[in-house]
Length: 362
Image (cartoon, rainbow, N blue to C red; front, side):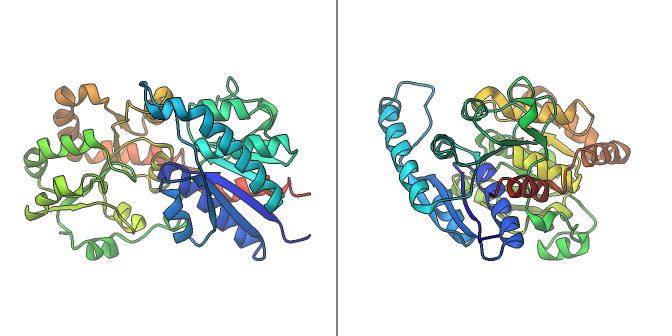
């Protein structure tokens, strides 16, 4: 077989970028001489994160439609036309064997152009409720790799493969708790709460932790609080408190998960998939501000199987303290949640997705 060439497109958030990089890494593992090109949206985080992972990337002039009337919305038709034109140019120049999309508006333009040029396309849908872009692309896609069951109402059944979502490879092999405690300089006699707001941070979760900080510390715990780079200036002052570590970003996710006894997290698809792999007792607080409210649907798919606790933002004032104090002190409840969420893990997701991609190489 000749050295294959792959275009991979996905971005806007870490939830689209990390799966794209994981797929590329596994393809590179199988085909060391393969050539890769990423395509993302200009000015989005993929333009930094993808080169850091060792891959070339080209940027398109594209952004999503805002919910309110803005200049960006008025520019959308022009941006879409520009992105389609540039997608055709990129594809014709690079000549990929397969084009893979992991979500985000750039991937919509690239996959649409590829399908019009009769190049095989693969959609990797992370969420339990697909966004409009992937629903529109599904008819022309060759394969659709999904992470949740019962998506037949959105996608053609004969094209769907239940693979799960790619996760960072270092999470598959469990890190040791003693190493994690040493790395983060934690007290081995205290339980550890890990707070995650996603790659950009979560304003409402940060507000919650700030308000409840004294209550949480009264439970004799220590906290690792990933607030996001947008919010670090607002919350770094709490590093002065004993048993609190506030950080913008966590590089060693394998170790921080190993250290955690309980996790409070948003329920973006990548976070949910990672938490299934590591099997940690989790309180999901979904963002209500995402397309199709898919974070609530992701969290509900886990909580309906008694694999996590779901608290809506609107219920935090009345429910949070009771739910948290019940959970942190209840070993059997933590164990039950941990076992049930782990049953939903798909540790071979990346390999299974790559198997489907390989089948399309001509």
